[in-house]
Length: 577
Image 1 (cartoon, helix red, strand yellow):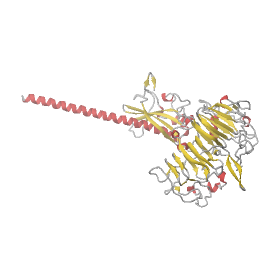
Image 2 (cartoon, rainbow, N blue to C red):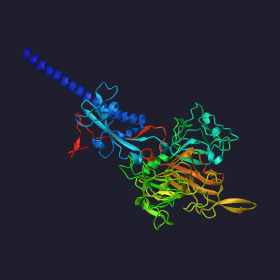
Image 3 (cartoon, one colour):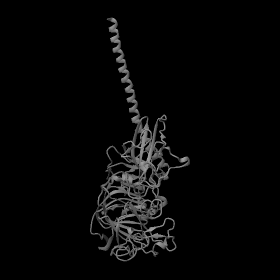
Image 4 (cartoon, rainbow, N blue to C red):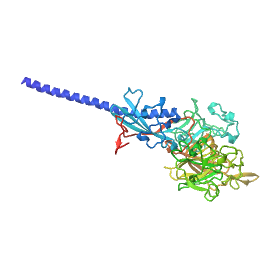
């Protein structure tokens, strides 16, 4: 009996030990699996960070990728880096390589695939990164875009008026306040402009300079490149008087510091998008080139009406500027009915995800003179597309407002599409410029010189003096666009005249080298600026980027694993996902 009892109890104990061991081993396995599962996602994130770093260090890295990778099937022109630049992360398939995560004890790996099919349209690259640790594999898809001016609703390089407009000494004034620019509160020698008068900036704002801020409201992040440790903005108005009434987001007391963002000196690089034999246009249609003063009216049906009497060729050769072509998609040059030089202009579809460039008329002897009209320059005498208007007073002839040879774009209407309009000289917004659909339409406006809100005035008798009133029969103005003046400013034309023009509504983003005046006294517009949040992850076609290159992830999400632990692609219906 004692022996039987001992055997029974012994058996029970053995079963208990076996069960406990089994549970413990299973727990260890589960813990290991959980650890690998989490680490695989971290490895995928490491892949995204690696590619982002390579882009920031080499602006030409967008050309690299594995053309055989499933995720890259819609991209064209991708090549694998060679020699010492080879990248193990571009491996694909069971025999393809994996990159090792630094610090991962050789057990964590990643690879990534590149989709650059929308890069030339929106500046965005998509990447699918897959991380592998042990038996766990996880994938993420991220959108990466160069950080730039359109990350901000409001951006300036200098918080002074354009020296071309004020005739101040550039050696004295064209420097940031923290670099020694005179900032006397009484003289305001360099023409600093303050935020005040109920201005509302409903979006992120940045200036490389030191801002003057009074009765203005900033609803989102505000930054400056002023490196001082104290107050990074001035509590004075444009006249130099001390002021209060600054409103920042909750918990913010002043602009935060961030490094300087360099602006290009011109938008000339955008012209390449209108050449028909470049690497970019090998995979998509080139944009449209117009020459001399050009009037563009966007129509809500997806077309635009273009008047450009100086244009001879509307696309040019990348290797020989004396050659060009005249596709019907850009409108036919000439003065016949329905042509660019006719009184009614040419009505054509808006170039899809593309660019319109308006260039100056080349002088005789220029290499491009054979493909564009030769014309002596004249100022404010009639530019061929209706400017100046009858009775319009020219308050300043320097710089020339309406030159006959100037690459000026005059734009208004309702846009149905995605396009950028670039002017080599001035760009005038001559009426409301809005989207047919704020969810899908997108417009970029760039100019080397100023972007002007058109405000023509006429002289009228005013007692013993002369007054100037607006010749427009409306008030208020709305502009839906991402706007940049590369070398000058965004401002209201004749801002000190014409009386109260109502409210200037901008839905998009504004970037300018110098601060432009929108309202002076009782003249001009009250600002109502709202950021188009889509610009955080997208951009108008062929838009201008900063001279410094930093890429950032705009969106990232986990997706189904793209590969197995053996490296084979995961298939659905027999096709690699």
